[in-house]
Amino acid sequence: MGLERNVLVVYVSFFALTVGSSLWFSLFTIYLDGVGLDATWIGLIITAYNAAVSLTYLPSGRLSDIIGRRVPLMAGSLLLAATLLLLQSTENPVLILAIMVFIGVGNGLMTPAVNALVAESVKAERLGIAYAGYLISVTVASMLGSAFSGILAKTYGFQILFLTAATLSTSAFTLFTFFISEPSGSMHAPYSVAVKRSLRASVSETVRLLREERELRHLTIALSLHSFGLAMITPYFALYAQYANALDVVEAGLLISFLNLGMLVTQVPAGRMSDRLGARQTLLLHVLLSGVTWVSYVFSWSFASAAVVITLHGAVGAMDMPARRSFMMEYSTSKTGKATIIGTLDAVIGTVGILAPLLGGLAWSRIGYGAPFFIAAMINTVAFIQLAPLLRRWRRVETSGNAG
Image 1 (spheres, rainbow, N blue to C red):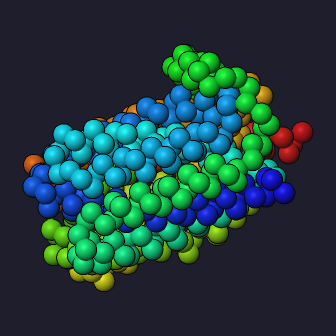
Image 2 (tube, rainbow, N blue to C red; image 1 turned 45 degrees about the vertical axis):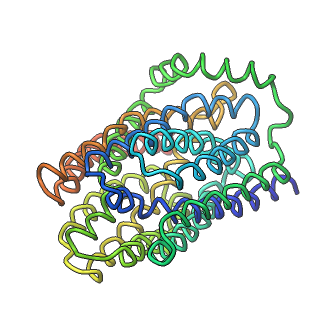
């Protein structure tokens, strides 16, 4: 019953967290543009946020494997609540950048822990569908948050978005505190020892893991390139809608909700595809189709055309995480825990993409509104080429096994 309750608590708490984050983050670039920051500053702030998330993944995955899943979830949600209250009170770009770093740390603490918690709370054969259920929860939340973000911002101002998100983060903290049960039992080490151990082992264990697992190394390179391309364009979907398609803040918020709608309707089929077709095949198809949707977005000319493309982008995006997480779980062992695998790969992938939003902003400012999307698609093509051999090697192993 405890493990079953964990899944329900994860769905509800991350629904609340994601409604809050999508309320403000969906239009954050428009907010920053409105307070007078140019695309380079916007890219720098998003870069700082991404750096904080990625660099926190590395120790937080190991920390979660040492002390359990509950404490990182509590600490991350509480940090989010506090920093969002600060974010609504300033328009200073330096302070905004600093606050976004702490918001990134909060998210970085929670992601490896929640993914490991889901993996430990279901049977292995239902892992893909369990992740899909989690992603449905956060996708519905994203759709609702982004749909109402523009309306609330236009009616009450952007500050209400930050305050609402802080309140929802506090509610998630309460759920984590009182309703999460540790699947792996009691804490293995005192907190101070666990923190020191996770920080000390972060770099050395990452090097060891990637050196020993050749296939995992290729997967990391491919996903790093793919995620770099995605990070280049993600901050600029709403800005492109505003500048290239002349949409207002309400329409821009609704447009982002269509992205989440595409993810929502495809989430369960994507989870089943990962379970039945295979995580590797599903991930390869996701990378291939991603570049197509990124370029197609540049050719949208109205709200309707942009909504169609961004819905397809969301549908393709839904194929990513169930396959990616199931693929990663193949490498977990008694020596290398699930959260360590997730945290290590997410940290490396995210670290590679730290400068992507800044480069996207520079391309936007110096070349044109569509430049980040075209450059990202070219980088994604290299990721596909890097990922494809992993599928061929898997097929050879499977064929050899069947022949024997």
